[in-house]
Image (cartoon, rainbow, N blue to C red; front, side, top):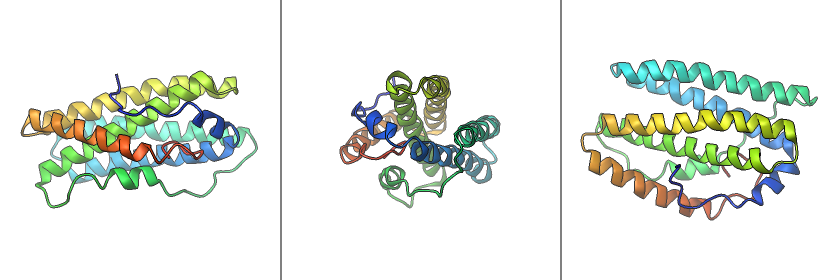
Length: 194
């Protein structure tokens, strides 16, 4: 369903289990960045009413997810650590060249967001099915559904706002291929995407 060209090695869960505090901190910042992305889309494209309405709802959902993750951190007697560099997102967002029209820029941002949500959904599924900590397994199972909905929403908007549906579908496939190449060098750290 997600269309990812390279699945995460299931052994990534073993890396995560060695440092739950680290994955929860990274996850918390991912939720915060997702909130920021939604706000950014509202600010940059206020005339896209349907998108704005969807992003307002997404801001509420993502910030509630941040709180949920933060609460998990606190329940375990930890505090939120410092933000980590997200090599996955840094590399991913190099794919599309700069200097396009405003509308093309929007479509590219939406495609990036769709792919980040798809990878998050895949990682949440892995955690829900394989992590020994049953409380976290349930937690990630519940979040996985939201991420799948976010992925499909962003992809729908990218297609809706594109001037050329065939072109946006080709861009999506090319971005998926590029992401698979990035993933070959990642999956060795207790981070949500890396």
